[in-house]
Length: 405
Ligand code: HEM
Image 1 (cartoon, rainbow, N blue to C red):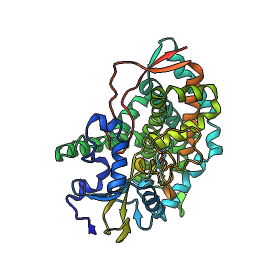
Image 2 (cartoon, helix red, strand yellow):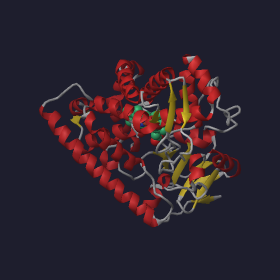
Image 3 (cartoon, rainbow, N blue to C red):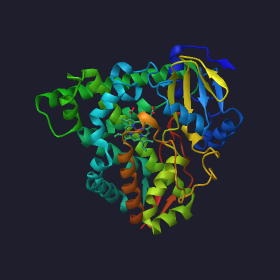
């Protein structure tokens, strides 16, 4: 069977920012996994007319799509002028990625351990006496922003601004209506304009006096003997700020959200901190901060018996693939002992998350120190959780936690 006719090309390109009709209510957005499960079992590959895109839910198919950038391009016609490597294909992607690869190797990232511990201590000290904290606002939000701001070389005092604008850039449409789509697009344009202006000033400053930071490194870098254009520089800065921020916040907060729901797991990890890396990996699989990844078919290609036409948008549902029983035993159980754990939450293949070593380290330090600082973490009763306004990001806006010393 084939299909794949366009409605409006713009809506189509943003298909992963428009909620699918099955997941609209607050409750479904807080716990979408049984719906993904049903979709994976009943329509593992399907064309959604409303969002004008294909949805793919099975592990094997998602893996195949991410593994084949020649068939499934990351250049979906959105934001490419900005030089964002997430939206690039080889050979340009390879060259741009190589520029900053070295800064993110596990070895380079490990050197940040002390700084991450210091920032974590600082954040915990602020809440210890209070007995409660908002996991997002007081802890999981500021930690990655402070670290990435320091790496980039932008003032950490501006972190509230980064948070506001990166939230806007990952937000989706409120619902499937044209009106909601237009509001989202307007906010995204304003957010990009603000951050462009912000980084332009810092780039000019570093041009005059370079420092030991990413922006200076990018300014000095050359590809095939040519410096990066201003657009490429801005694209890189904004990507690093946005990609490394909300995602890591949600990883840390999603782990805490799970541990307050399942206090046995919380106790197991607290009494054996060597399990923290397992906690991080299983949280990534079970509550993935990034639920879906978009691509565009570069030629007619068959997936699960369907022919996806050249040019069609394809949304790969990592959150569904991570719970595919063909790949994971007891997929709906949170298992600290799961090994191997080949979740797709950092993507797969050439676009595999560049910041994965940093995100893992930040989460590991943050969760270990949180568990050793408090004998118990509990949900503050009677506070309803509110999901983040985005179909592809999984996380909550606020997570009030009661702390016992
Ligand atoms: C790519 C998830 C943290 C920087 C990706 C992709 C995913 C992802 C799924 C692949 C997207 C695709 O294939 O189209 C996450 C998650 C994180 C996280 C779940 C935290 C838990 C970070 C951090 C940074 C970062 C801390 C940097 C400071 C990037 C970059 C790319 C990327 C630059 C693009 C790589 C490329 O296109 O080659 N991330 N990310 N991420 N991530 Fe992350």
